[in-house]
Length: 230
Length: 230
Image (cartoon, rainbow over all chains, first blue to last red; front, top):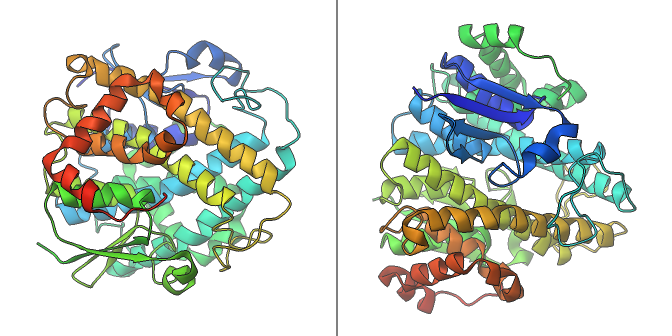
């Protein structure tokens, strides 16, 4: 087993699916967290100037949340076996990632983060906590609309997809928890905290989240993890 | 071999990677294209109210561009063999997809498309060519910045990554063309047409695009495909 180091902010965000998969697979890793005011220090050492990033044996750093998740899923049997089922698991996970992606952009934007060189070409550093400018209100509206629109597009499909397998009583792919089930937990964590009524339309997805949280390895992880707002 | 039908607009966009993979694998499929003014008719039959969608044997419809691409890559040997190399291929493809995703959102937005229920919760249909409103200029600026920022974040990393394998003289994973190489071709097609000078900083990526275009199956496909603006 390689020595893994996971780099991310001191938040759940895009890294939580990876932490959850490490926990479910019972794999040790260094959970390297930093604060927003440390980002300038870390940013230039990250492959695409973004995180999460996985480092192996102190060597090469790997970017892209979902590429890392897929690697861990193949390594630790959180993927189904045949190609059709792998595609199903992939598109379910990608649908949840659409929500996570649009939510994270909305969440950080409204908190005034990650606006590198907004007035220029986008090719330069600036503080992740730099001030809010003229385009803020409209862009806030756009990003909130985008995130909600994505929820309304993909959640009904995911509810139906879950229901098609044993009436939605188990996991997405049957009686084994796969990484797409863990994506259901992670991607909806902040959205659910912020707007519980929106999710009353998706009772099977909500019950699935409880099943994931009740998984022996996951329940221990959820009790012991850092408690953060996002 | 199943009977495949690919649903998308009459454009390259997010579907072109799939068409290119079908061509490279020499697999026949029905290339079902429609115009923007037909979208209301198709939209509700698509799993997440978006395209591309792959239908198999006239049965279930599968969403999510990259999930479909991964399925085709596993089916037709456009993935490397071991898990580490699969992760590399995945993060390279995902980096290109970040550009494709942000470019497509920017491109459609500035052309006034896909603004379903902008003033409300995002849960309702409207014409994909409905009018442009107050938030347009600022949102245009935001989306252009976002797309350019993504290019400046990921392209230097991709250029370095390509160079690390045989000095960048072959493909990303060695002497065999993988689906991440085809992503390099497709994701940069419109960006390169619109701003060639931006890409002069990435000569190895540009040379790779020419190698992909020169692949025997791909070159035939590129000569015979529909000629569209996007």
